[in-house]
Amino acid sequence: MYHDLLLQWTRKINLIAPSTTTDIWDRHIADSAQLFALLPISAKRVVDLGSGGGLPGLVLAIMAKVARPDLSFILIESDQRKAAFLRTVIRRLTLSATVRADRIEAVEHLAADVVTARALAPLPNLLEFASRLMHHDGVALFQKGRSYDDEVVLARRNWAFDLSARPSVTDPDACILDIRNIQRGTHD
Image (cartoon, rainbow, N blue to C red; front, side):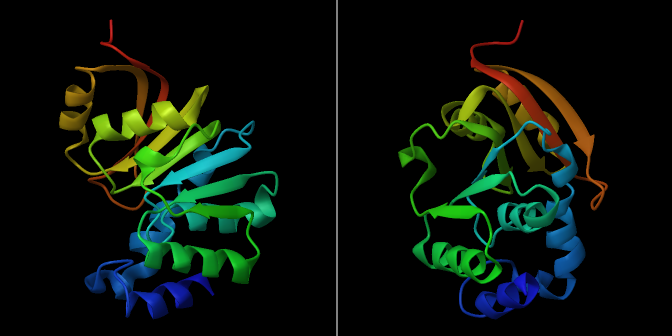
């Protein structure tokens, strides 16, 4: 049902690039789903930044409905039309998720165990958002493309963090940045 709703709404609003509608499963759904195995078993709250078409937030919430019903999701999306799409999917699939239709900068601390983002912003910006929205011992899972090394170098100018770059299973040029212990300041 999510697949069908994503296609239906994409005709009206820009949820995914029109050029990728024929490859939704691999390009979007499987790409988002690979984060599920990286969610710590102790996690209870996941915050997805710039959720857009629900990638990865809705995909993870759909998977969690059966496999991890203890997980709850907060999807942050400032575009009201995209937020309406997210709410529609959540309602129709009875997911344990809510939508915050605000700019990320306006959202206050949410005590997230995990913060996710896909194709949203440069790493320094993502670290700023994550540091405000998650527990001090939380984990950030950011999906990045081939230039992630440059973003890491730039981020380390103002941030200290532990990083594990995991290869993407859907794109040989992409990776998942598993980031922990985020602190403002330089890395020693």
